[in-house]
Length: 288
Image (cartoon, rainbow, N blue to C red):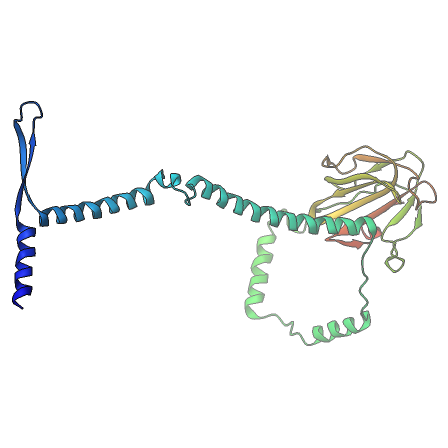
């Protein structure tokens, strides 16, 4: 115990023993200034300085562009560019998916690859009639009051009873029909007999989405209209519009011909497609 106490006193004495640090002029040996120090003060000040240096260095690396010069750290601009590229890639992937679906629907229009759906029409009509018989159609008191109020308002409305046509289809060409629309035979079109070089007109306002030559159907042009409606004109002698052009209803877009392998004479092979499915053009257009 005595030895340990002596050793502790000796260490304490060394730590607290005072030294004098003097700065002299080298030529005149004049004392400029001096410090009184001991080993404990030097150790404490050195530790505090080291901690402050570590903190300042950490802050500089974390919150200033200096970290970009340290190996292993990526630059802020590079991270921002990587983030922007990630968002752009995701957007392009979505656009690519939509375009692929659109191209697939156009491919159906060009090839006529549509699967027919078989169902029993009589059973559907029976169910519909049965549902209609079970519906209570007697007007309620609120409904009667509303009808009377609307009738009084419409009595002085000059537009009441007038019908507004929002979408009209014009005949692309006039002539006799050589082959009707027949989905069972996968003939999703009307074949209209006409003369060579007869003008083929757009059935409505729209945008040309396809105008090319195909081996089977010759010069083909597709026009996209409102309400996801697409009109198709095949076996043309020539085309007067290109892809991307806007057309008006009744505007000449092609000249009738007899081009392609699947043709038997001068005629127009005309199709109408709605949301990727064929519809009968005769239900909307009078060709004769």
